[in-house]
Image (cartoon, rainbow, N blue to C red; front, side, top):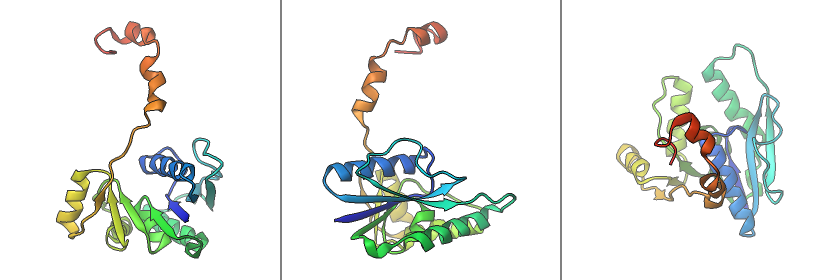
Length: 187
């Protein structure tokens, strides 16, 4: 199965971190996974190394001095839309409103809901909730907000925690922090 995951940035934002973790888990499960994103400011890769089994599709997105937020949002959608090739994939999944607007028919993970004042971003946010054919929420609280606000019944798949990633930190010598912050601050 060919799966596309899309996000709007290469920086360590929540949805981006989630996208990469999901892509790597799917690749380990034997799926053919591509991650599409905008390479803002000349970025050609993500903030961290990604398992080589994941195909990275970074779309160049040039910085424009003085560009208004609304204009940048619309251009972000357009640039990703022009580069994206949905016919390559069996499943298309978007992590945020920009990529959901760019990739067309998709499954959308809704991490949280926002209230935007920029008209273009507010419209982007609305379409990214109403247009996808399926919605996933990372918490029951967000799913409840989607249900109450739009009448959709999203599937709840809670965010996971990579326990191995945090084991070293939990077992590390914290004496430096105890000295700096006090013994009651750092358990």
